[in-house]
Image (cartoon, rainbow, N blue to C red; front, top):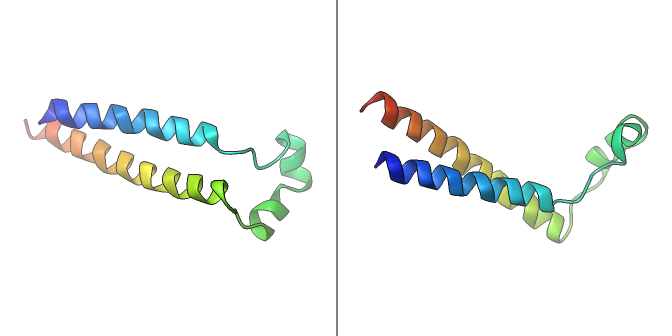
Length: 78
């Protein structure tokens, strides 16, 4: 069971990394974060593929946390 949990955690880690890398940048580096980054975060809604990637990222992150806790529980209760 532990081996399966570790494999699932590894696969989810790769999926999470790929989904985060596929997302478009929100600002133009540090200057964008200082000058107009706050406006984009508050005033702009994600549309199209950005919204889908955002949801997939949230689901993959939740699954990652759940799997990490499951692996830790399996290791402790061996």
